[in-house]
Length: 99
Image 1 (cartoon, rainbow, N blue to C red):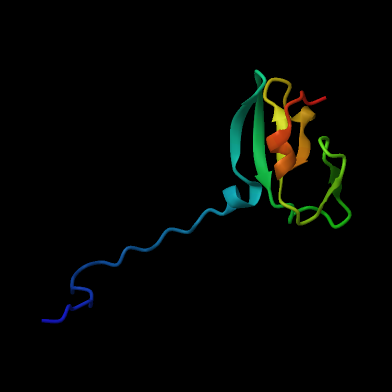
Image 2: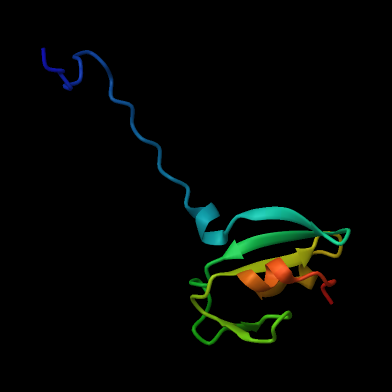
């Protein structure tokens, strides 16, 4: 006998909740430990930046322009003032302190 996929009568349809995309827009934040220093890192897609905004990666000294996915890292103890923007591959190989 074939399956009946029709919903049963009397059951309420549950309204789907709206997705909160703010975490995706602002990136995933996590703690990382490199050479005994705790860093807070956050991914960024760079799409929300101004057209004339660009950053210089402190590891390779090349520009990160609008639309390039990258990592924003800062020293957890000294705070957001030490924030720097890294290419994804550069952050993986980075071992020095943030200046």
